[in-house]
Image (cartoon, rainbow, N blue to C red):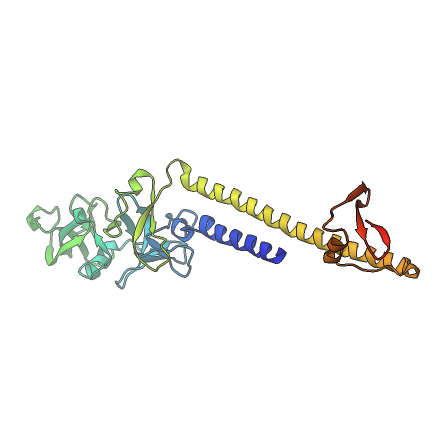
Amino acid sequence: MQQTLISFFCFVFLAFSSKVLGENQNTCRELKCGKHGPAIRFPFSLKGTQKIVGILGFLYPAEKRETILELPIPVKFPIKTIDYKNQQIQIYDLENCLLVKLLKVHYMSISPFQYSKNQLTDITLFNCSSATETESTYNIDPVPCLSGPGYLIYSSYSGYSIGNFPLVSCTKMYNRSSVPYRWHDPQNLYLEWGEPYCGLLWEAYGNKCGLKNNGTKSTEIECLHRKGGSQKKLVATGASLGSFVLVLLVAAVYRVYSSDRKEKENQLKLEVFLEDYRALKPSRYSYADIKRITNQFKEKLGQGAYGTVFKGNFLLNVLLR
């Protein structure tokens, strides 16, 4: 019975801890790859760890502790910011050659992401062999990564005529359509995701989005409320109740231990008593025998420091204590 009680308390404590304290812990956690890196949480996963469970894509740290977004294209871009409310990622190029890399991969799929539509533009490249480098102007930008000794490469909005350029000796190289590039922000690229849709639905109201904890591997999502510190209150309540259960468990173990020790002490005293009075030939009686001898403890004679005295009938008239 005592072991059963202990096992029950252990089961309750473990079940409660995993339910209250562990529920959605991998969904709600936030991590960073570096000291100043963006907060990483659902719907993203951090590559190489199970600390965050996501369904959208993997992020991983680079050598310089930059946070890299894993995309299905042959270039890697570090992340500057993640806007969970508007579901947008700002990425950039460490080598300051963003346009050159985009011209190679802009036609490839980056699913489950897409380029921000308000930054898509048609670009034309010009080779100005005898020009000297000028400062960037609106929709006219030098491309140092493509330039070389004796010539400079410029990018421009395709709707511009070469006659409008403040340049000389320039020839058109080629056009590229729907390139995600901004002349007023040439070093940054913006990606968006549509699913799971949590931003304006939940994140905007101070809540978090996470996988539904229904005991399956379902990719259904749910809103994890955190307004007014409800999530912290849940953890605090869980910790308090968990501590209470733990105290009950310790008390039960102590009670079992004390009862067992007392029983052993009583048995030892009885053995000593029987040994001391061996000459008087003391006899052992079971509880059933004593009930029969005292006629179900019918006649009480008194009570002392060692217990209650009842009248019992033996072959000889003896008082039984």
